[in-house]
Image (cartoon, rainbow, N blue to C red; front, side, top):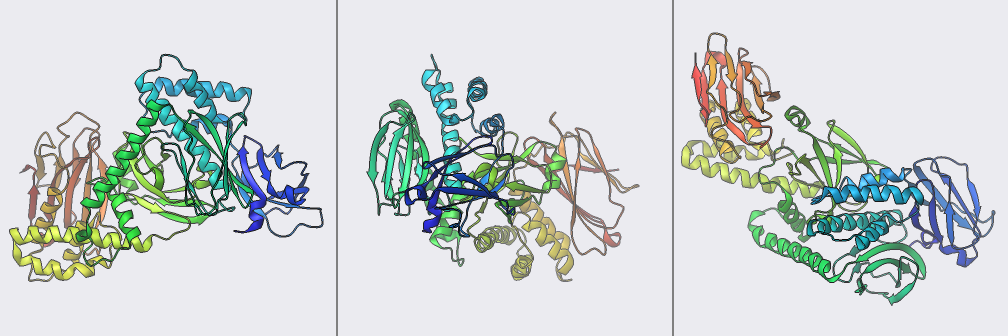
Length: 583
């Protein structure tokens, strides 16, 4: 551990002020100085006690702090924290708007109003304590209201502790808090003691912990507590912990048991035979199992791509943004920390309004291992998960995942072709490595395979026949509606126009997806057309190969699929699970 880093411990932030604990005060340091990053102008404050509050901060930025015994003793070491300049009501909204599975929206809005009022009187009050106070004072509470307050309180408590762990991350190795039972810390073994006090500062107990990796807090009495964490007698963090009464503790334990049983079941379900010749580390196997548990069976879109762009900012790229935009609903990037993957009381959400989104992790105090996914307005996860951390590179792991998913796909397809028309099996088998060398995701392997066949297929194979088999397998392994349209598709031969009828259901319509390889082109182009509950006309006059299928904008079920090849005057039309009439 860097001893300098333990000089200053962050305790709390309010709208325009910071509260710090100066460990170095006990070593005779009497001056604190700070500056905004990339600005050489310092502000100096005398240290008269370990507790220091810095007021009138009015700029969101990184701030650099250091202490010394006198003005001539400062060195270049500086402690960096990110000051989040945020109105207190905006903080309340940011937390409450991201809480999942609310059973009583009346209680949620009542808590919001209560917090606005209390914080307008004293903005320095702890939000999690105010919600705890609301909880213990409410009368005639109903079961759905208890569940809602529990979810809110757990989420806010998690937010508070994330904030302090994030701000003090340079002091010590990361540790985590276990909220189940009587509370515990999972540590690196360097924490020397824990001091527990109640909200009013009354001493409860000290636990000496040096060398312990799992520290049982043994907080059994219901109440609101502060956990002061020390390393080498330096305060390195201040956490909050809420202990509930016995009936709610039973609910928390049930959540933990269900979570553990879920993980055990997954370990049994996804055994090593899935991985075949792909060597995963034990950690990577656990990643894979966790992600498979949350991934949708039939993802609608490709998982988001995450890149670190510096200063705790990331760029989130949504490859299928055009499809989401055409469907027309509100979609979100959901963000979970690894330790809340199977807990649904708090996610962070960002509206998807562009193909790329810049996300500032500082604003949500996110720093450890995170999982990103795409979710719709009903809370349905529609993409696979992407794991990200500023400290680790998961590219090698996801390359292995691609190989695993590709193996699963090609095994299934080859088995299907073996039963339908085995003469094409050898061609596909011999093409797999060439196809995978140009593929970065497994969602559209079927499309990459078709593109390869159209561009590189030999005269010995019937391209139309093999493509028909690939498309039939694709639809058979999707969620499709065998009565998607209310009428047949009409093909007007005189004008080379297809008319796709309205959807059979009276809903928000469907999105027609057209993948086209035009004559003399070397790649498949995809476009999306919104039906708006009406019919869609589409011209196939340009020579090429066309693949048509539709997605219901509400259920995400697929229609059947249509393949047309009109190159060189050849007229090949393949329909699977659709009716078509020619006029």
